[in-house]
Amino acid sequence: MLNFCPERIYVERSVKDESITANILCKFSSVPIEYVENPKILIKKAALAKDAISKGKRRIFVTKYKGKVLKKCPGTKYHICCNYYVLNIATNCYLDCTYCVLQSYLLNNPLLVVFANIEKFLKGLEEVFSRKNGKFYRIGTGELTDSLALDGITNFSKILVPFFAKWNNTILELKTKTDSISNLYRLDHKERTVVSFSLNPQRIIQNEEPNTSTLKDRIEAARICQELGYRLGFHFDPLIYYHGWEEGYYETVKALSERIDPGRIVWISLGALRFMPNLKPIIKERFPHCKLIYEELFPGLDSKLRYFKPIRVEMYRKLLKFIRSYNPGIFVYLCMETREVWERVFGWSPMSNTHLGHLLDERVR
Ligand code: SF4
Image 1 (cartoon, rainbow, N blue to C red):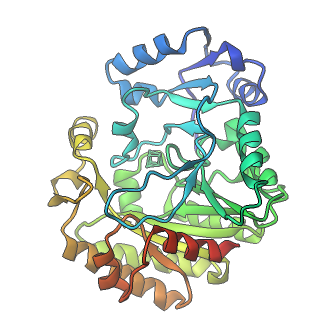
Image 2 (cartoon, rainbow, N blue to C red):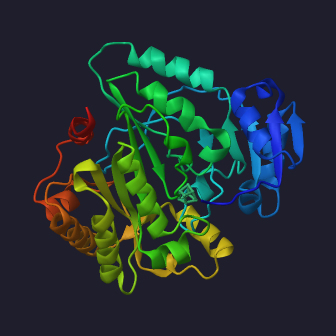
């Protein structure tokens, strides 16, 4: 289990009586609390602070979500995406991966934001799911945060998992780099929640994913979720190219195969390291030891920096080979890759985002 204690908690007055707020305050009764009337002033101050990113990760801001409840994952231009929907119940993360894109996405608000008005989310989802339009919704909470890192504090999963269990036209994916699954033990999930773990070789976890759970603990958490009847997903994302990567990923897949029943795995994704160029100076400043940014990285059509195409293809092919030798039937897909790379890795490519989305939906319908 991970340890986290914020330095300060800010609570917007309008959510002071929400149950999520009570959960957070109860957990950290000795942490200073400040009630906020004007969030804009707080956020501006946090964004302008010296060392804003590191400081923001240690300060929780409990506030109200005001936007559209369900959003399409923005994906990335000219690449095949999986037609995913995102539910942003929180933004930012106290874990501190060197390559985390949130460092550059959340510059305007670096606080660890928790949206406490859960009723708005449930009402919005209910409205969408009851439309009976034949659509299926794959939804994740892990786009702008780690789905489970704060779960022992907020208890969101205790509300969301039983809620999703009531619907057969949707699936919730909780994606994490932690082993924080204690809330998942006694929930009536009816297999409408997929618990997904992002994996990397332990050496990468140690060097590039500070504060996250070890590989061994993540796999053990996955094994427990399997025992609890949840379906599982795994994400080798970002795949990191380093001296010894082949052996590192082979050992990682091997460790997975020794503990997990492939029949419970609904999907495994592969996605090579990628980020917008403005993340580079941030990584350089925050993690002077980090070598990832000194690899040869080239801008793609979406402006993101990636490894040279032949390297990505080689990594995907190898990973696919390792996974296929563990079990040939596991559904493997690429995250944010071009049609050409798909074809070179698999010998075929989805025709569109909708096609890939449909293939994934079929795994969990
Ligand atoms: S766990 Fe995910 S959200 Fe958190 S720091 Fe790492 S990459 Fe970012």
